[in-house]
Image 1 (cartoon, rainbow, N blue to C red):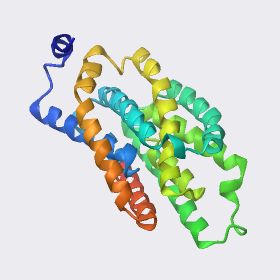
Image 2: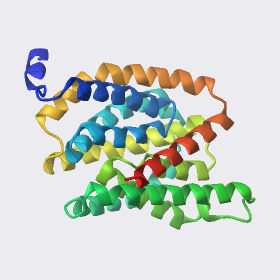
Image 3: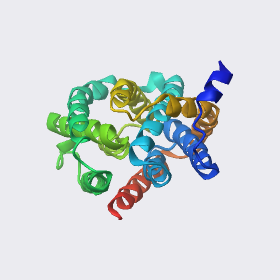
Length: 256
């Protein structure tokens, strides 16, 4: 079986491309179990060294495998009421993204995602400056619908829903372990549902899957490193780090 996978490995990838793919696999593992937000940086990184559609097809199975580790570590901490609020709108967003991908270029998509994420971060900043009684937006059902839709849309177009989910979970004031557990289950469901869609669109091929399978040990390394990081980082710093990373990634997406 191993020899079959090796035979399917892309032989046209340069050493630099393999190095970037390895680095991204570690980042995905850390993102899934320790520092949400670092994963969004993988999106522009892969897109800088691979063709746009191939980069999204390479990334999705990495994310899906990382989700398995995250659920294994934090499945007991998930808040299913939030997941169930987000899922219906997210599925609609995925359907909309699948239609839009036929007509929108990566160049046009990146700044749109960046604007959405920055807007959501500003909303969360305003929420933090006001008391819960003054700003009830996160508790309103429409907030979950809007965030779920944009999470589905951005994940289908570019695997870039991480910052949207970060903003939603920060707004709900979940503790860090519940934050990770809820995010883990949400993305496990979403990402595994997306795989056949990506395959039908030609973004996932036997070559990309075989390359991703080889990355599994590096995802595991990143996942265990992320779990150790999460134990050490205080809740206040955790929230600050993920907001900074989300903002930095959003700004990166706005740049040409």
